[in-house]
Structure formats: C-alpha cells, structure tokens
Image 1 (spheres, rainbow, N blue to C red):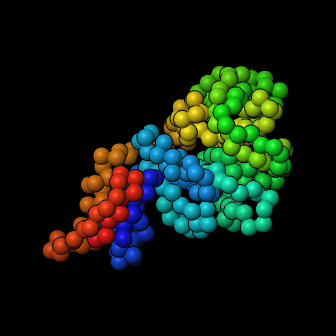
Image 2: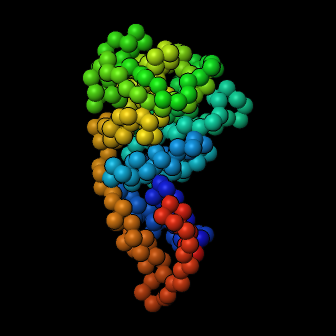
Image 3: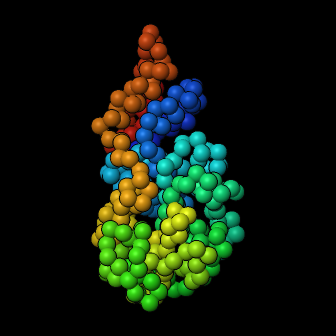
Length: 275
C-alpha cells in the first residue's frame, strides 16, 4: 500500500509495496531535491509545517521522532525542523533526540530549527534549563529583541528589523529560562518568555511559537527566510513534478513488460493507492 502524506512523501519511499522494491530506486529520485526533514514530536501542526515547506518549493519529508540517526542520514537533509508536541521534556519517556544527533548536524553543518517542544528539547539537550509555568496560549504579541526587548542583529529574524513587534500563535506550558552556552535571546513575549533563540555559529535556532499557522502574521515569511537565506536550501521541487516522479518509481520497479493495477481512494491529502 502506498500512502501519500501531507508532507509530500509516500511510503513508496521505504520501497514500493511493502518492501518489494529496492529502496535505492526511490532514494535516487528524491535525492534529486534538497530535502527538508521534519521530525514529528506529535504536534497537531506537524503536517502543516511540511505543507508550508512545499509551498515554498522545497521537498519536505516527515519522519517520526523515534527515527534512527541512520534513517535520518539516509535522506541527506539540507535542513532539519523539530516539530512541536504535547509532551513535557520533564516527563519520563518523553521524546528525545537520538544519540549522536547534535554531533552529526554539527559535522555536516545542517541548520536545525526547533519549534515549541522542539525548541525546548534542543535547549535541554544542550544543557539549558526548562521550567513549567502557567504557559501562553492563543494569539500573542512578541518583540524581536533581547531579554530587555532591545534590538538585536538576529540571523533567524533577519527578514525584519530588531525591535519589531509581531503577533504569533502560542501553545506551551513549559518555557526556556536559561540558555545553553553560545545561544542568544532574539525574541520575547509580552509576558517575558523567551520565544526566539539562536546560536548562528552552530546553525541552531529555536522558536517557542508556531510560525506555520496562519495566526502567526509573518510566520511564512520567517520560514522562507530560514529555508533560503539561513539554510541556503534550493527551491527545486514542484507539486507538478510529483506524478512524473511517482510514475518513474513504478517504472523502475515493474519494468517495461509488466502491468500494474491500482485501486485508488481518498482526497488530495489522504490518497491511498494499492498497486
């Protein structure tokens, strides 16, 4: 069964028809594009992150938070986004980064953006401090600047001037109260929470709010800036190319003489095919 997700990937990418195909067939095709890898930590908006990336002309791929490091490496991502999620980093069994992740992205110089839980996880893994509080929920105002709301030269917010005000969408109970070494505060909420952090030298960035949702008024602009200006990703993928690429995958597996019967069901974001 080949299932298309809202992130533009199918389980053909694990080998057509339950492993019938050689996985290398698919890798050779999707590696024609710059891959933006999204690690899913359970956020209701994870699929939307993938969609925003695709709308910018970049190939997005979703993988679960428990994906192995080798699995991540196999898709050769040019950028990685850690999604939000409902867990607290303080809870036993909460999702973590795989062993060796930080060393790998540092060596490969892969930019990483943590969103909400993803930011908290990134900070905790680097010895920052996360505390639980009353949280912030809904649409709120933030200021691009340091903890005193003074203007800063931010790489992540390079699309706007320091000290700018923005309305964003919050949904968090925990918050970062102490940054790891090398990080700077680049945005704060009106309640005083740290909502934007960066270590530009290591290409590590974090947002406590959700730039992917429509309620964050400049969220799409920030994501595009992160993809193209910060990460240097190429906009080399188009939705119009998907059909041809999927047909090429099938042709490489089936060959010129065999036939395929396909039963198709579902809508645009939930299409299921059984070849």
